Length: 123
Image 1 (cartoon, rainbow, N blue to C red):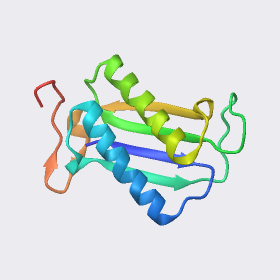
Image 2 (tube, helix red, strand yellow; image 1 turned 45 degrees about the vertical axis):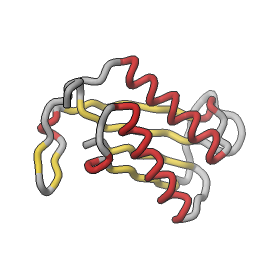
Image 3 (cartoon, rainbow, N blue to C red; image 1 turned 90 degrees about the vertical axis):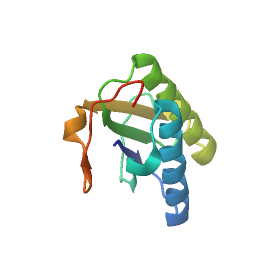
Image 4 (cartoon, rainbow, N blue to C red; image 1 turned 180 degrees about the vertical axis):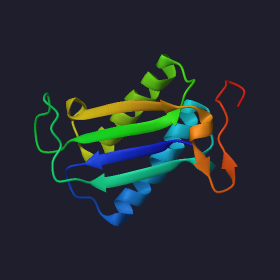
């Protein structure tokens, strides 16, 4: 039951944002051995993002709220895949992107029909 929150400091159309959100839910499901049914993806345009190493005029930050339990390698794989996808889709340099993971116990992630459980390789 992740919530992937993308902050962009440039404009995108509603259609671009929707397509990107769907793509990121699918990428998350693929890389994190999950399902897209409970994934939430937010794409927000913000006025400014300061990322000290950034150059140029486009910056993206992903705040990924996920269930605890994934390995560092799995999270790194997702982060690199997201960075590559953002670079390809929006032309944002890799150095102008950041991914931050915040992990939650499964029970802290809820939908109308369920309370999340802990993640495991067999989940």
